Amino acid sequence: MAEQSLEERQAQMRTRMKARTQNQPLDKIVTGAEQAAPSDTEQPPDNPIAPIPEFGITKDYRGISISREQLYNLVWTEPIVKAAERFQVSDVAVAKACRKHDIPVPGRGYWACLVAGQKMSRPRLPSTEEKGIRVRFLPPRKPDPVVKVKASQTLALEDASKHLHPIAKQTKAGFDKRNLDQQGRCYPNVHFLDVRVTAGQIDRALRILSTLLKAANSCGYEIILGKSSSSDRNERWARLSVDKIPISFNVKERVRQTAHLPTPADQKLVKTGQQYLIPSHDYHPTGELTLAITHPWTSGIQVSWQDGKRQRIEDTLANILETFRVVAEKEQEALRQREIQAKLQAEKDRRRYEEQQRVERLNEQLKVWKLSADVRAYAAAVEAALLSRLGKPDEGSELGQWVKWMRNYADAIDPSTRDDIGRERRYW
Image (cartoon, rainbow, N blue to C red; front, side, top):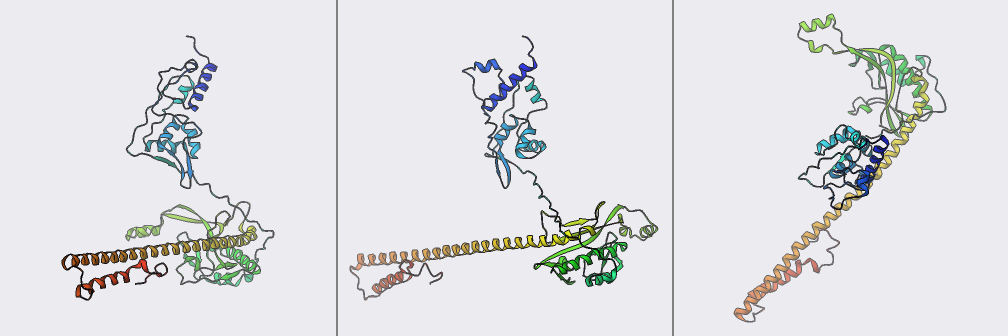
């Protein structure tokens, strides 16, 4: 038999792929001649392959899922790399899912052997005790695009410290250079503006905030002073109120972290057994400031600005001020949506409570109704016993009065004879 050319092998491969898309078995790879004259005795495999576009893949809020059997068919119909594209995950994630659910996968070189025209077989899908297993994939969530708010004007930075906004002046007076955080930045004692910078950047940070506050006042925004006694950190520092929406912000200096270098003071600490006081890192100022809106949290827009190679915070103050307005609008819309959801939830709770009250009322009515039926049945049984022994009983006798009272009591407690059982919640 002459060796087949590459074109002939490729033609046979296309024929086999077409056969698989038509739900033909893969356990036996047929050539073009065999496909033209199929055998009448050929039996279908135990694991038939569904058409490629189907595979029972479903998508909902929990991710993309497929049955265990269909995933087995899929990974033996096309390479795992292509199968992973259907679930919007990596081929590693699909391979892990197959191992977790005991699904055999093609080995290395399987698809190359098929292209070369070799006859390949696949193992059977192992059975499991649990039926109806669905394999679920969670595609990575795409982050919302960040929109940079741009204003139509620019703001001039304050030139001298004597023109600072009153709150900026009070913040400057509250700085104590001995008060340092863990990264060596100064912060004010008073709770006016949230500023954490090194000593060399205090004046610049306050000029930036002073310009921002003055522009905010001209736009009609209010300044809310911080409350040092508040348990909420956002309320401890000054905030801007834009359309009655408080917005928290701060200015921080970025520091560079390096491994701590031992000092003579560290040696003294070691000698006194206080080596736990030795820091593990040293922090070095960079002079790069970051202004950020910290509350309320908003997605989809830029809420943090920092010094870069081409632009500094001073150049973006107008955009920052405009962003405050956009954040306030988004928060107002979020508040409206939360209010709507709260009303819907309250209405749902009210209906659930009323339904629960109806069920409880019905159960109590059934209990009393069954009691009235039992009383009537008992009265009839007593009367029948009297008839069998004494004949027709005297209604004025003690037993006759007792039977009459039982029937009257049953009529009195019977809820089915009342007109107010559907209106009143507790009528007895």
